[in-house]
Amino acid sequence: MQNQSLPKMLQSMTEQEWLTIVTNQKEHVKKTRLRKWDHVNDNKLGKLSFLSSSAYERYIDLINPNMHLGKVVSKLRSIGDPQVAPETSVVHDPKVMADDLIRFCELNRVEPVFIYHDEGTNSIVSAVSPRHTRVYDLDMYEIVNMFFKDIPTEMKFENDIHRSRITITMPQLAIQLGGDNAMNFRIVVGNSEFGYGSCYSNAGAYEQVCTNGSMAWLSQFQWKQIHISSPEVILKNLAQGIFDVMSNADSYMSLLEQANEISERYIKENVNVVKFLREDKFRLLKREAESIYRRIRTNPRYQRFNAFDVGRAIAEEALTTPDMVRRVWMEKLSGRVMLAQVRA
Image (cartoon, rainbow, N blue to C red):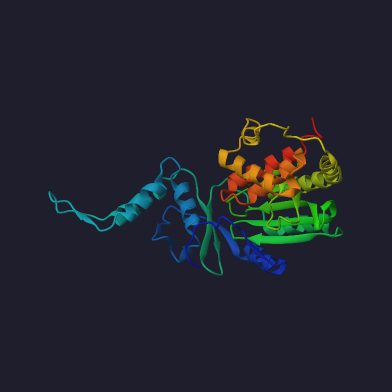
């Protein structure tokens, strides 16, 4: 596999394809503590090669977290040809300097460094600190199956080696929005075995017209835990998080149905809509507020101007937001706004 940065988007696949990947990870990706004489040279550690540039960058960050080692090494390697000092005739090769700097940091690291490597491909998947706890994606899958084996669901499986995600949609938990459109309840469960993220679950509602996954999140349905506890504790907490979501799913959808039935405007007549959307409680950027207002003005689905429809427009805007951090923030905002008129 070619070196590449960690993908911004997970790759969709069939359940069996997903299971093949996570089963291989559990059986063949092993954790090894690096020794003082282990040295990374030319992105390789002996016979092992880094699976991606992000895996290599994690290693560089770990061997010396107190300096911007990654930036220094990258700059040295991009300088170009060696330079000869005229006063000494000594050749200064930036690539050699980068390698020497890495070796110095390896020999002087305070904390141990561990790597996850695939025994079948001799590739390094990640580097982690001693505090990292591995939670298998396959164990996450078993918890999901435990909860939903007897419930009609539609599941979507995604993976990029470093991270995994299962999206569970329940068609029976839905409210009708007119025509062929409905709003369904959805739970997302995710994990990172190798330190690229947390184990988490979140839930909310999404419209069927928004097929690429944008949701209106609800904060009470969000659970996240970084990988520094025991696997048993993290998995137990994940199961509890899913249980809490399922215990409140019906009441949440009932609230959405009530919100959908409200005819009173959330954005009053003669109010500057863009200014309203940019107020402190929204914190939307001007271009975002203008785009959302265009959606409200031009789409018949949103022209009641109640909180439910304004929240839906915000969720639709999130679909076109390339910045994933901003998109998630906007999806959370949409969930709050949709229920604004049925909650204090």
